[in-house]
Image (cartoon, rainbow, N blue to C red; front, side, top):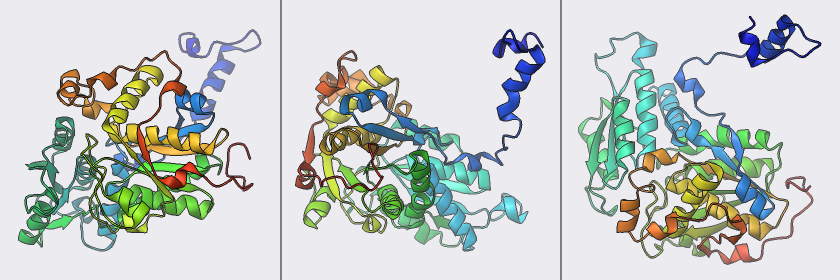
Length: 403
């Protein structure tokens, strides 16, 4: 007992038994989680200290890298499978009592990586096989993580969407050849994706901020995250501004600003974000403004956060946080800006955090920001929607941090 009391040393007025009782008081009735899938969601909302101090705003990141599969995509993967089971499109051996191998269905998906990992995790937990088609520019760490859950991964050429070898079309062809034994998650067009965020991520943010949210900033690939978040947060308060951040090579910047799909010049190192078509999920998003973030800014922000905050994030999360800084400066001090930390940097050790890889792409100079400087000196290299240059005057709605 005395050894245990080292964790909660008694004061001069406490006995060892009283100290132990205090130590365990908060955990006596902690609920158990029923399987790993019940651990998806309810992620922390983290104040990014350096960026908040530099802008005078609360810059908050939803720590989605703490999901069991390591990314925000776990939410969509789980919801897609749950809805398919409810509709009778999937029949889990875990529930039916059937032989796990007899007529086992296969979940298939075309993905830049994280959704594949999420679906592989859910498939393993529910008793399905899983086959993922991924582009060759997907990080080797993501491919390995997908395979660790028992999924088959077919790596496809990184070609334009019009090419039949594109991973999306390869997935479609797989389904056409195996219509009775396969279920296609189809994350781009399945609205279960957006519903996952409208019903879980958005309400969690409202609770975690006590309802004080001025802006949500997020990139889009399938469009599910920004669609679900914009729907949920604007339902909470119509004054919440939804800001899209789009990378080079994507057409969503032009879609928001001009109503037409036209790709920004260049291409990006960020995986799983940016797209050149309008998906069913993105069509449901309520986007107010948009910014575009360069690869140089992605690299600088990712390495800055690792050195300054001990926060190691992937490229899409670095994009989100760079854009959040810009939105915070446009709104002015005293506001609450929320974004999504999509996944962790360990999935990009061979790319974003590899000196050789960065040097080969002319980006190494951006990977060594001075961790001791004030982040106020860090100016994100962004192409800005003109609407952001003249933000509306804040209304006294109780949505802002200073309200």
